[in-house]
Length: 430
Ligand code: SF4
View 1 (cartoon, helix red, strand yellow):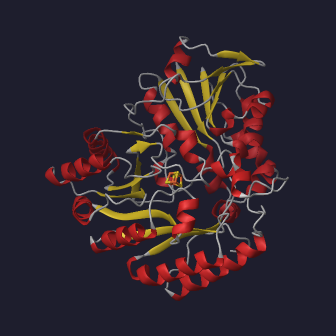
View 2 (spheres, helix red, strand yellow):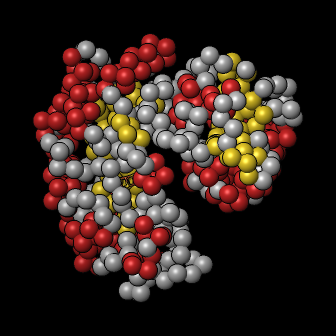
View 3 (tube, protein in one colour):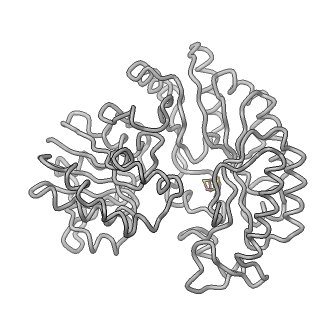
């Protein structure tokens, strides 16, 4: 069978979309082509750089239709047995433009858009894959997986989460077009061991699964040979969910004398000891980004972060002293946060600022659909209403966007005074 896999905008521009690369890897043996329409649009329309940087959702809902011709043209003369789209909810207008460009081709839609029943009702595709597609996609193609009828299409829900044995295939992606010109993406695990109250990622990716160290290293060696790159950026929600993995992985890189560098996101946990961090550094780990969020024990407990401010400060210090650069994320305005909690975070920042290289993000607390904050909003005192989701919410203790912006301003000022201007924020006017 010949199959075209299409990545729709909006998506990250830094590197290859790993989810689609896993699907390409699962289809080895078929004749697979890839069209990354996201990175193609990014290069076609330089005027959209700001839209990509600011994650301007309004643009993707309406104004993207100005680029209709571009999306039709990139599909021209493409004849395939199957076409598979990776789409999110902001991709829907583009999906509606591109689907009719493939008459007579069997159309499969995956990614976050496929999970939305309202979207499925509107979109004219043959199959929707709800969940991780790599263990099911080959069965759809060979006809052994029929799915369940819904409206005018079939819905396929994988019976179990992939065990991470598929190796992603990057060979059909335009690696030189992504903005990270040195790195290659890698994944050590899926899911998360935490259940932070403001986050919905752990729920959609659960359960937590990690690969074995040797298979990750084989993939790194292979891709380094093919692409001539030695820098690996882990896309995991956290790279330290499985400490024995991290220890084995670092040890194997050292034993095999592999001169790779690697980095990723991590959670604060006591097991991030000085000896482990030094081993990681020696194996090539150059940067860890911690979702610290707050240095107030009250707020950390309300968020269900699973660690204390004392542990956070110690792990950050251990990491920097091991020679690994430290990035942190901070969230301001979680329900129940007080001015005294902000003071604690300000004091904590002044204590450990010397060990932090970057504040990756300083964000206002938003309520995300599907998070514990959303599902149990009344337990957090949040007033339900049409503004509940997003950042405009109010609670019964007097928190509102004005209060949160004032607190945000205090943290921002302190961060700048420490020479740590945040790289990203969701605050209006940032
Ligand atoms: S915020 Fe990070 S650590 Fe917490 S649940 Fe989400 S992904 Fe996991």
